[in-house]
Length: 359
Ligand SMILES: NC(=O)c1ccc[n+]([C@@H]2O[C@H](COP(=O)([O-])OP(=O)(O)OC[C@H]3O[C@@H](n4cnc5c(N)ncnc54)[C@H](OP(=O)(O)O)[C@@H]3O)[C@@H](O)[C@H]2O)c1
Image (cartoon, rainbow, N blue to C red; front, side, top):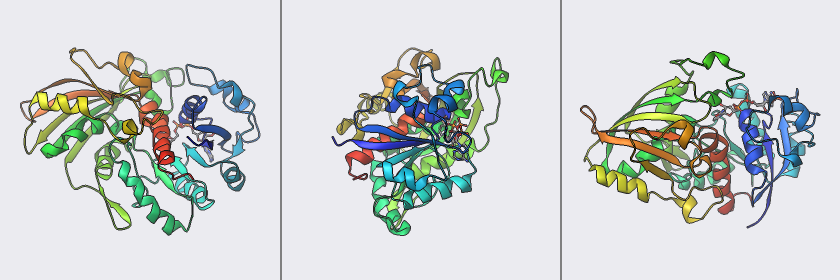
């Protein structure tokens, strides 16, 4: 496979640090550029991020002395050195939109973890096992932007990465309505227990903007390309409540679902077991071998025990049973900063690389 030089925009942040770890020994991607805000630019990665390193493994040795560039002022310089960039920055939504478009227009494709462009109609929002065909909209996006190589592709919010994969193979039974309550880890807010001690022995019943994302994003992921845009699916109806819980990593969801044609429990379990997509077919380096793992034990999946399954890229499910008001209920879990953030971004980039979008 061809090798690609890549940049990490927002390298000093929580998601950026994850990207650094995941890309340290990546077989296709070689980190050439690290960038962050003007506050960090000009410092080495170690100087800028060493004291706020939140990963449990050390900063990659070969990146420690790399000098951080300014993500906004150095766009041309960055674009010249890399084949594409990952982007995860904490800025205002309109600033992120403009920044990502500037990179695309400088012919530097962007694989983004930010939410700013998730509902731009010609920007694909991809879970590679579910809607890999949405990357074909990039042709229309390039025409709009007037670029040859440059484009923006995004991954979805971390909250939906557990229940949308579990629901997807069941769509053939006509999913009519879904209720999902999510129990989300503090790393989803870029925090750990040292930086957010108020979360110890606590639960906060509100995460700004999360319920809207959790209800709307699945409909774009399940949407269809029509002309120059991705048109959102009209069903199922989805309602959610998203809570912050005292867990370091791993978002859990308690899900209730009803169907037009109710399947048997055995049919659901078989479809979860057999669910395999383009990433598995193409044997992409970050793809889990088994995407959905079902636990028979009543007390699983557990965030602490099961979030790292298949390098944090698999989804765990459990407690599938019939419900009195919906057809079924079950619990699912995914690692929010791996599958739900940087890992999902790397898998999307691998899909785009395998399909020739960075050439
Ligand atoms: N944490 C998660 O699980 C998760 C999951 C999915 C998506 N996301 C999304 O990913 C993005 C980053 O999240 P995070 O948790 O990694 O945030 P974070 O830890 O606060 O890191 C923010 C990053 O943005 C950079 N930045 C801030 N202002 C900037 C500016 N004006 N120009 C350029 N860079 C700037 C920071 O650089 P400095 O260090 O120089 O300030 C830092 O590298 C957000 O959009 C978030 O919604 C996060």
